[in-house]
Length: 388
Ligand code: SOE
Image (cartoon, rainbow, N blue to C red; front, side, top):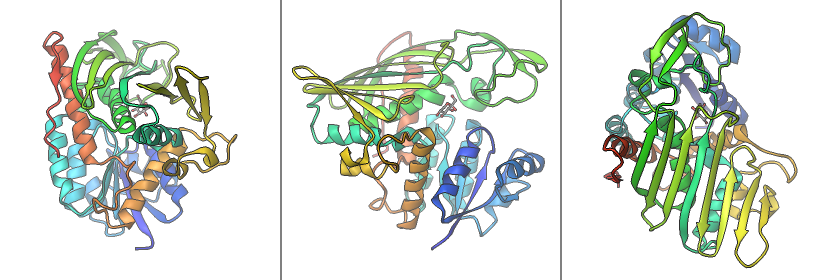
């Protein structure tokens, strides 16, 4: 299989980055796009130079030139589209969260696990070289036993009550908003870097902006226009969350998530404190990894391929001093996905940094435990993961 064909369903904000990442691989054909209508597919396909515009996603799935489906639809369509793609024998790369609920994620995981097809969730922050460096150092015991895992994922694009997203509508985004959209990334990253799993959570969720004046027409994430005609919308899902965590290796954790916090654009931070040393990584400065010591000087590891652990080196493409960032990490994840497909998509051939539907299902269970904890008035909730 020298050339593969990909097509994308759901041409919103993130679609351009999927197409761009695939284009950078050089050996995958961009076959086409399906959207909510033939017209939206045509418009986006012209904008992105993305091949054929399908009338529907079913028509896309019938096309034998398509081997891989990228599912970037809103959350409520993830299950329907990913399931149909797997049934049509296509490899699937799904946007996160895997589905609108843990039950739906479970159905997808069950359908994918024995399919012989690749099933990937875009927890793309795993694709940063220094994230892989931190993971390798922890796995080799260079920090000693991890005791505290903490950080945040803060944004401000929903601060203005006139900003709106389908993510805030439980029928489209699922029961959780900020946690599902970005808390999901942090939890996956913390687990991936530490090699341990979140087993219990205690969450306090809040809706800071309970009424929004939403544009009548659809908007994309990070849209700042304030001119459209408006309608009043009551918001029930969280835009702010504080969560305590327990990990299966005994480590404690703490996470803050918010999308209404002025000044924070895409501020994902993760710090792991071990008994011997600490590491901290920040998404907005991804070329530096802070190392903290108790009885020697602290240090900063820069993204210099020559200095990285062999397992992390493949995620750095430019020499030191030439920063790599969000789009490069996204490309790394997509490259791993296609490498998996080309090696038969077997459990053994999966690149170890690549997140699958098993990770997506587990992640949905973590987020649902947070919702349960808040609904219970602040009781600890176990994450009952039956995916093993
Ligand atoms: C919007 O909050 C968003 O685009 C998320 O949906 C992405 O997953 C995150 O990477 C950036 O912010």
